[in-house]
Each structure stands twice: as C-alpha cells, then as structure tokens.
Length: 379
Figure 1 (cartoon, rainbow, N blue to C red):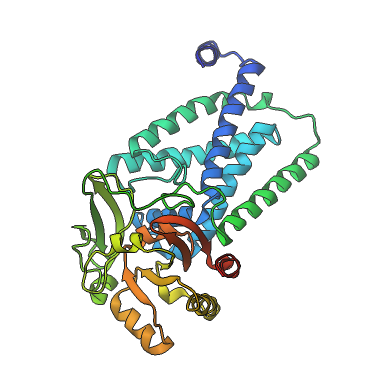
Figure 2 (figure 1 turned 60 degrees about the horizontal axis):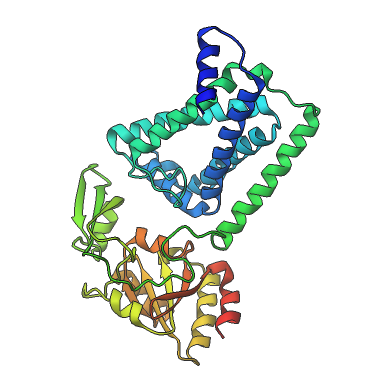
C-alpha cells in the first residue's frame, strides 16, 4: 500500500503516468470491494429494500416507496457489475466510470449521514458488517483515493477482447447475479448474517438488561419522538396511522435476542416463547399484505401441526384491533403476540415467515415461498 501511495503522489506531482502494476492493484482493490459490498447486500435484498425505505423517508421521497425493492435490486446489481468488470478487466473504462459515479453518490450520501445522523447505519455491507456513519464516510474516502489513479489514467485501461464480446460477458455476469438476488429474495439468504441463523441458541440471558429506544416521526408535522420500548402506543391504531418508525438504538445489554414479544396486555412473553419445545412461530411485519395463497399455505401447515406436538404461534407487528378483525373475517384462531416491526423483519426475511424453535434453538426457518418444503421437513 505504501508503494501504491508513493506511486500516486509521484504521478500527481510530476504529472506522470501510473505504472501498469499500480493500476492493476487499484483495479483489483476497488473491484474486490465492490463485489464484497454487492454480495453482502445481494444475499439479503429485502434488507437492502428496508434500508432504501429509510433513506427515502429521511429525504422526503416516500413517493418512491413502492419502487424501493426494484431500486434495491438495481443498486446491488450496479455495484456487482462494476466490481466484477474491474476485477476481470471487462469494459474497464466503462466500469471505472460506473465506479466513479457510484462513489460520488455514496460519498456525499454518507457525508450527510455523518453530519446529520439521518440514518444510523447505511447498510453498505448489509447486515454482515456494522459501521458508524463517520467510519462509513472515511471508508468511502479511502476507496475514492484508490479509485483516483484509475480515473486519471483511464486511457491506459484496455482489454484485448472485442467490445461486443466484452458486453456479452458483462451481460452474462449481470444475469447470473440477478438470478442470485432473486433466489435470495424468494427464499432466504444463502448466508445468514443476522442473529436468528439456523443452529443458534437464542435463549441466553443478556449480560445486563438492554434498553431499546425507538424513534417515531409524525407524518403531518415532521415532529420526532423517542420512546423506551415497549413504552410507546404500539397498540393504538390511530396513533400508529399518524406516526411512522424512523430508527432504533440500544443501550446496555448485548441485544442477543434481537426482539421482544408482548401479549395483548403488554406483558413480555419472550422468555416463555424461547423456553417452548417444538415451537412453530409464524412472523409477519404486516398481516394486511398476505394474499389468499399465503393464507392457504398457512392453513396447510396449521392443519398438519394440529396432529402433532408442535405449538403454533404468531408474532406480528400489527395492532390487536387488526388481529381481532382477522379473527372475525378469516377465522384466525392462532395465539398471537406482538413485536416491533424492525425486529420481526430480522427474524425471517419474509412476510410471512416461519421459524422452528426448540427451547430457543433455531432448528430451521422458511420463506413463504418454501412453506411446502416446511411441510415435508416438519411432518
């Protein structure tokens, strides 16, 4: 790295071309980092969508919310294409231009994040690596520094293959990675960077009690208010329609569980849930989005579970009033507990999702697209 920096300083001060070796090193470093970043997000496109919604909210662009998933897919794909093309020297000049545009966008966005604390975590590396806003900004400055030699010596970046051939290879890369993104969206992340990964024991006690603070913003006035969870009017449907979730922060403890579940009276039943043997826990961050096909899949699982020793519950982010409507309109007979929307989204990246717990041990979990596979595994 010291040699590379020296090369950069000499070339800048004396206006000389960079050595081919220095450019290859820069190309590999930038390409590898873009690939890593796109992989950590591409393995969890729903997580990137949620982060995209955070940004659209703070920048007053909620009119794009319905396109958040598409935007997330395209952003991740753009990062990957830039990275793989730089790494394999396919369309290197075009890839350098793409990297430059992306880094300009990322650098200024993370600077505003750092200055004004707009979003507590940019999600640059998905859920794999958490960084503070200032750490993220400084990281981007380092990438910018390594990218500069490629920009200044763009004409030296060449590939012996014909342009049509390079475009065909780039398109093949794009199709392959897009298929990877779609697979992770329809099913579950092939690499789970979140707390609730299969094989993890979730009923360990925190070293000290943790305090989760939730920030909500009034949709009409823009006023923000912070609450100590669960001491906020989560079960007030009128209040929930007027306020929207912004972010959360944790103090104390180690936030091992990553969620808490309450009954209708506000009693914390998390410990009871994690002590239950052979528990099938359906999760939903919004029951209103479930389709008739989803409900049919749930019914099939519930019917099979009734003939076994499995216990079936739901943990949802809707208010109790909505659940009562479901009981009346759909014959919803499940035992229901209530949790924070953000926390529920980290348990299973699907709405609805299903997780199989045995005394707190995560045995398996499934996306709604894989409920038929769950039937085969469980019964």
